[in-house]
Image: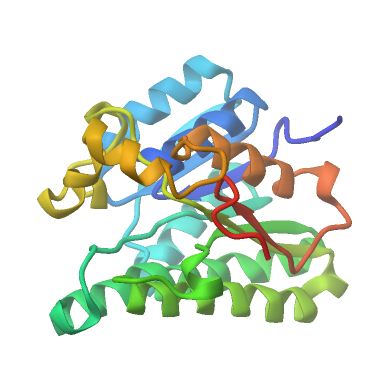
Length: 265
């Protein structure tokens, strides 16, 4: 299968942790130019070094707060100044806290909306002008099956991910005539194997979410998946790379669950 990703300019938001890290390294192995748009610059630099060792044509970190329009614009301009273009955008940044809707504070709701929805909106808008001018581009966003069917204790997060899916489908209709494709990958529960794979700002670094990373809890969670295991970051990365590649050149507006059969819809 020819992916034709060598030499492509790829931006991965949140590319320093967990799924984002795996996506960054997967593109590196395809010899792409990878830009890690990461708020934790130190973690981003660690992964950039890994990406260089994995075969990336180049690997660079641009400190980016995806919730801030000015920060996102500056990141895209920096990539375009260095490489001339953004061929692929991966909207990977995401955050949630496992709690009932009525137990969460308004500040937590706002953070979920800013990171999960506004981050995707900001980054997508920032790359579209260049992609339209070149009449080519691929945008792959990380959704969630929570956004397709709802999920207990994930109300606002689910609403945001439903927005990511709906906006991707809508834009796929709007910009397809310019040769731009938008697709969504919906991971199941996907945890880092160690703290080395995440930033201190990662949702998986919080005490609330760290409880899910014990062997006992992982075994309990795995029982709800037909494949009887929790997702690995590499599982998701493979789907993202495929959808960004020439092998998926006739695929747009689609939502792909990589969730071990948790949902079948």
